[in-house]
Each structure stands twice: as structure tokens, then as C-alpha cells.
Length: 137
Image (cartoon, rainbow, N blue to C red; front, side):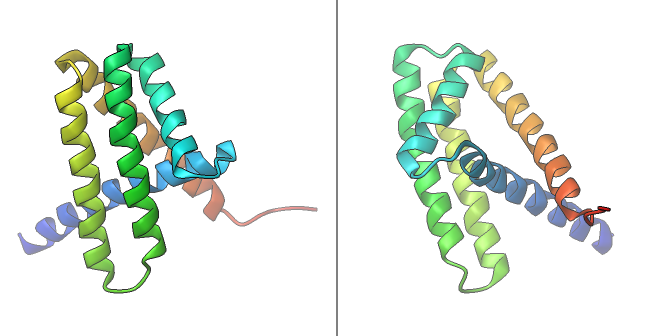
């Protein structure tokens, strides 16, 4: 019983961590230099894929901007306990999701959640590929 709780806890933290890392990897892959650029990139993707209105897009940008800035602060603060960092990370992700729920229609929010799940899967594959040792001639 205790082991299953530990496994469930670990999986939850892994998912939150993957989501956070995907945000930062998007920035690296796109050559993004600052929070504003990354926020714009994230919002553009959301507007395109979720058909957000102009007003929703503006609100989503503000939420994304705050999210990116918080993620950058967490990334820089490598001090302290790992568990505390993961808890802070989970709070940031949950705050963003709740803010997005307030901005979007139910249909858009459900699509947003599916989009984040897909990003997690893509990140897992990317991380797995990076862990494989390089085989060359």
C-alpha cells in the first residue's frame, strides 16, 4: 500500500517536472532569448491550436508571461531541497492551469490539457533520445 502511494507521488512529480522542462526546451529549440519572446511563442501556439479570441489571447499571454518568469526563477534557484523545488514547480503549473481554465471555454480547456499531454510525451521521447549514448564511427 505504501509503495503504491510512493509510486503515484513520484509519477505526479515526474509529470510536473516534464511539463516545466518542456517549456524551457521550447525556448532552447526556438532560440528564444527572454521571457517575453517565449511567452509570445507559447501564446501564438495556443491561439492557433485552440482558436482563442483576441481577448483570450491577450489574457493567455499574461498568464504565460507570469508562468515563464516563475519557471525561470525556479530554474535559477538550485538551492534548497529538491522536494521543495518540485512542490513549488507543481504550484506554478497548477496556478497556470487554473488561470487558463478561467480564460478558456470548456472545449478549449480540454484541448489545452490534451495539448500539454502531447507535449509531455514529446519531451519524454526527446529526453530518452538524449540519454542514449552516442554511437559513431
